[in-house]
Length: 306
Length: 286
Image (cartoon, rainbow over all chains, first blue to last red; front, side, top):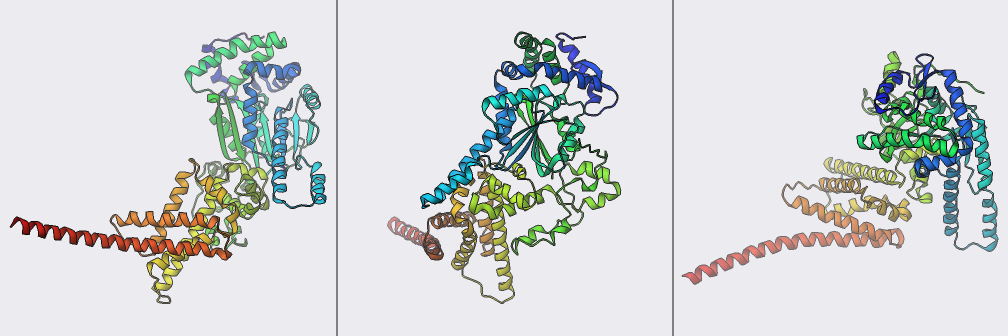
């Protein structure tokens, strides 16, 4: 049954109950928004949610967050500060937002590098300059690569279409895979990102362990996710906006009330910053830290495999 | 699809890179002095970061061995030291740190542990140089105490100390202006200032300064001024082996010495004048 807008009193009651289930499967009962379901049901339902929102995913993101999600993703990539030659795994990368930003960033860094190199060679002959351009023409990304991995075929399809539309082809690959069981070898990637995806993973601890496994020693784990707002006034406004406005937008723009109801409910069910930090440390990461954006509406967690 | 199942307990090998400190003794030292930096902390040292918590609770009997693993700080230290050799090419940037991490077998993403403006690398380098200088001065002092060397006069001592410290910049002199500008960013001023004052303090200590009055402040202020101006001169000096810089340094130190003589002369003159006036006043009143 679909739960319609819940009051704030119910919020606090329900927050207590599934707390024991976060991250670890204490039993077959898990949360799907504010409903209680089994693990299998949860995976199934989440798959359906994203199957139905895939086409309107980007439009909805813009309208729900008033475009601020772009800034959040930009901040994530800036925090990553990748240099050319970085291998990125973007899990739950869906429509490729992080992947495209990564490519843009690396391209501009590479451009700057090439320009600096040429500046040093002040007195090259025309022949040498020509050769320089030749060899670097096919290396505009400096061997950087991003692998976008998502469990949902529809989301990957939407992402591939977007890439084609925007003209991204080099250094990009699309893989169907489950964050809890990644189809990659150990010690492969420099950076692992999961933006607004870890909330939808059923067994977060498994996903974190997989992240640890596929990262190279020294590799970085970055997680961008909705989180807990501690400021009480802002929290009330945020709740109001989430439960009154977002499902309505979902119905009007995407014709799908239920998926967006799930979205805002799942945000409330997700562990707060400190708890997620503890879970990341449990998976073996060091120097785990988080940065709140917009007073905790969104948080970026970062950890290193040392 | 690969499937990896991890035991719930984290084995000692969970840390991919933090290695046993004993391994480090086999490693080729970066310079003879920095080898001392690699010495493990006294036995029983427990790296204090919280990751040690879960590890020690799981390793049980193996808990003893976990003490020998290097801490994150030591790993960072190693990365920064390795990064220094890439500075002439990349400057004091996150790229140099990334290259340094690569040589240690780590991913380039490890550079994300440090601040992106490269300030961590610069501060590391400055504190390493200061440590080397202290060692040098300590050795010289021992020689003097053993009677194997003559005690230098103050101005020569100061000159030699500042020259030795500035010579450490020579391999990185091209990119040093960039480093100075980063050190002057408001965010970095507390750390860079404290490193500078500690170094100046060190030099004066080994020069034999034991003043407890206002002289303490004037001496340090003067030497800081000499050091900073000489550093700036060195940055745009193109003479062979920086001769012009050392001559500038000599002149500044001489100036400082003259000034202190002049100051004491002024004081004694002042006293004499005052006494003369008092005498005149007494005469007139009679």
